[in-house]
Amino acid sequence: MQNIIVYGASGHAKAVIDTIEKTGLYRIAGLLDDNKPSGTTIYGYEVLGDKSWLAANLDSISGGIVAIGDTWLRSKVAAKITDILPRFSFITAIHPAASIARGAQIGAGSVIMAGSVVNSDTTIGEHCVLYSQTSVDHDSSLGSFVTLAPKAATGGSVSIGDYSVVSIGANIIHGKTIGEHTVIGAGSTVLTDIPSYKVAYGTPAKVIRAREKGERYL
Image 1: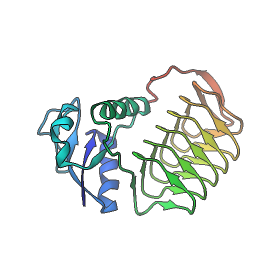
Image 2: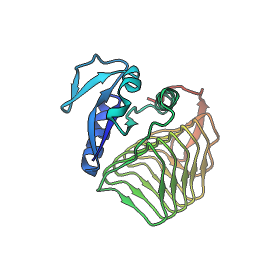
Image 3: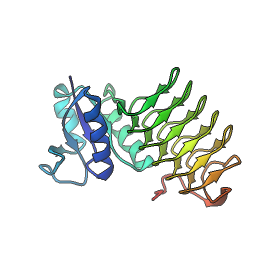
Image 4: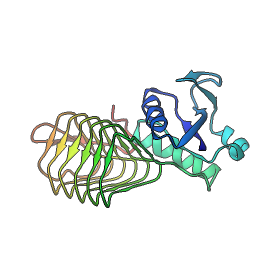
């Protein structure tokens, strides 16, 4: 069983830890976090330190995962880890209660939580998060650092750009494209393409305003 670290010690990290535990593939050696003191425990796992812990302890672990909910912050932490340790191996955590269809591909660092469905020939990029009961239908494509909140769903052949978020219960009909760094609001129904760097919501979803790179989505 591989020894790994989980980077993050928030509420999102708890959901990631549960998914990792359910896979039965990894042993969590501990947590890393820039904002919580060493010795803090989450679900029985100790916060070992921050990023500096990695360089001194690489021999004791085989990889890990970034458990940070915000898409942009997740990407920044993943980049810093790679800068420190270019050979660091990001794991993929797929809950056994998720359904991954034939031909689907899941990128490194991604988390697929309980009840999620990734349908045939769909590609999920690196460091994505599919929360519980999400559904991505056939032949769709998610970029890297994309988040689908609980019960978000897409039809077939949907494309979602890097760093974008589909909020709780939002639906995207087949064949539509969501740009990068875009947020689709909770409960929305997307019937048309939505450009990059936008916030859109409603039924049907409409662009409400522009959005900046790195802007928090919650």
